[in-house]
Image 1: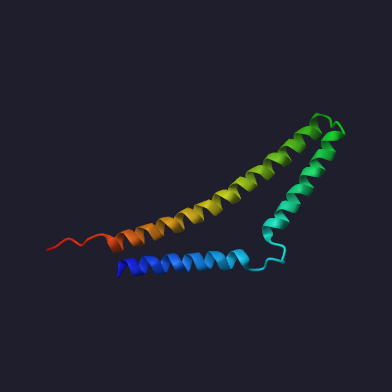
Image 2: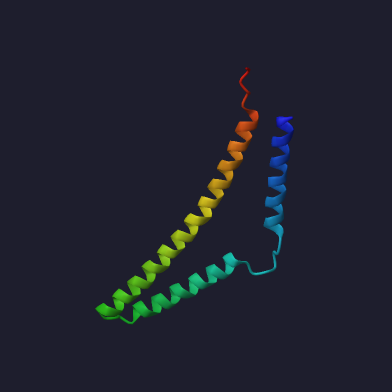
Length: 104
């Protein structure tokens, strides 16, 4: 019975993954838009750097770049934390179902 439950959970997970992967292939995704934005920001940053800015402008550029990098790392951290917590919950549920009950 437990093997059937684990197998069905695995099948549902794989089907969901495949559905998400192939859904909306022609629609620009958030990831593509974010990549385009990052590319545009980088080219703007390069243009600003080529103009040999003075010290105050270089500090401003640095702060903008660091702020963007920190925001990106925080967003990635939230994403991976959600994934980790979901998988950990799944492991705990499966472990509790498979653990033998003590006899009284």
